[in-house]
Length: 145
Image 1 (tube, rainbow, N blue to C red):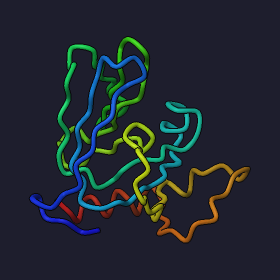
Image 2 (image 1 turned 180 degrees about the vertical axis):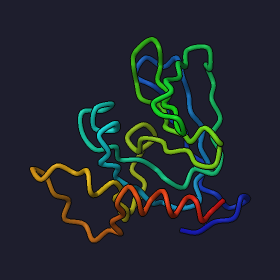
Image 3 (image 1 turned 30 degrees about the vertical axis):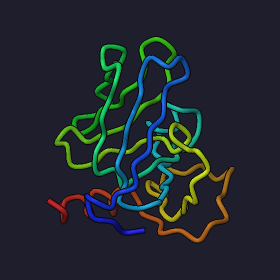
């Protein structure tokens, strides 16, 4: 699903305790998996996230805590229940939202894996996906700017 801003898919979800509500607009029904060490440490496994977020609105922002996980990115979570809310580049050019946070049965398409060079060998996804190393991902973002 490719969409203009007016046609974007609009969904919402809440953290476990209900203190934070996210509203997102998506350009595609695409899900990506990040295998980097930080994502795996943050969530105990690969981050399965919506990668085409074109707009994010928060309600209950006073309950959101930000963690600067690198020079270029930050992660947000609910300070009450710990629910992971999103990952975003500090320059504002990209936001990822965990798919389980807003999933209500949409026909998601798992089609991208990145930091594939950091993926442990003990698990494997069988989907046919585009696979990017960390370097390839950084190069793709530098071309977009």
